[in-house]
Amino acid sequence: RQNAGWYTHYGFKNRYFADFTLMASASNLLAPDHRWNVSPTVGLAWLISNEKCMQSQNVVNFLKLRASFGMLNTDNIPGNGYWNETVGGGNGYPINNNFGGDGGWHEGRLASVNGTTEKAYKYNVGVDATLFKGLTLTLDGFYERRSDIWVSSDGQNSAVLGATSPYVNAGIVDSWGTEIGANYCKKIGNVEFNLGGTFTYNRSKIIEMLEEPAAYDYTRSTGNPVGQIFGLQAIGYFVDQADIDNSLPQQFGPVKAGDIKYKDMNGDKVINSDDRVAMGYNSTCPETYYSFSLGLEWKGLGFSAQFQGVGNYTAILSGTYYHPLVDNTTISNYVYRNRWTPETPNARFPRLTTETVDNNLQTSSLWLADRSFLKLRNCEVYYKLPSSWLNKFWMKNAKVYVRGVDLLCFDSIDQLDPEAMSTSYPATRSIHVGLSVGF
Image (tube, rainbow, N blue to C red):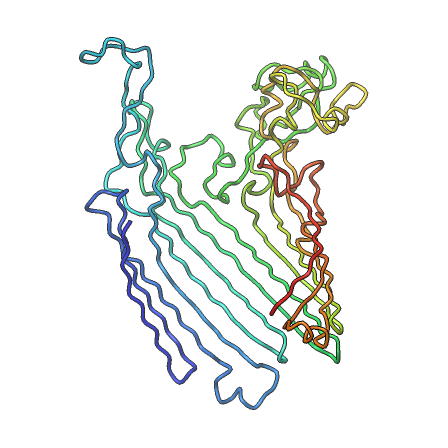
């Protein structure tokens, strides 16, 4: 990848500012005639606090209004998306002198034609302010449209094509949100304290992805957020064979007592993939992030803490932890205690079995959980040694401290850390006792 750029900055009377950036980039993942693209960015700012009318007041110490617009090009191209390919496999047949063969060869995904980069059009408006010589505020609103996203055109072509459809630059996604930040510092006599917090909300919507037609619009990803989960609505478990016989048929394989019963969402008297609906939020990226911190110090003795959390976040409970025994997988006591039995018809999990039950492995409301959490990220108690002590040892500063990391977590996921569900190693808590010295 090659890049070339040009940047300029202009300020007028220390109140009005403008920035302009022009970036040209080339990607070797694209065809020679389509490799180079230009990305301009413009930023404007008005330093309101430097206006004459603001000099006679003592409430607003700093106030800046800013706005920016930019267009970025990225070569976010699928690994096999641009070139035609052949795929090995099949029963094998001789090619030239290769009578042994590695299996047959057939044409893979068709090559893309005149592909280009994915483009992101970004808009941002923000305000920065300092009030009462201690309160700092930041507010941002943003909107982004990504277009020319590489998506498969399978949904637009019939199987009569005889090959896998190519990727094309047709995807469109809108994203928007806001960021808020505040911090307040104050010293009263020998007491110094600070409070701060941030909040970020972001949401997206798929405008176009060349999705194939569907019998029911509610089963389509188009119009929903990126990563939207679709699943079946669980309404309990089958009680016995009579309950199974008197219930609507479920087309996910045989069922027995203790298996999950689903709701008929479209009223066609059968349970199948057409009954999947949007539920929960994204399982990989929360919609909201927030944090807040506090600190207090008196004559060198201090305390600080930082909390961080996420919201609008959904977990899909899957894997060996929640689907035990199949293929001789071990089982946890938690799953065993919360399994379905005739005596526990409202159990958290379906019946245990050493066989794979496809009906129970469908993505459904039973396997979804709120993944939101609030964690105490850092907490420290410290004492700064007096300067009269330090001067004797040629030290500028020193403090002893006890520090904890990830000490507390407030969430609704049983037995698992919501932040480490997809990793092999759990999150760890730690406590440190130390001495820091500066010379």
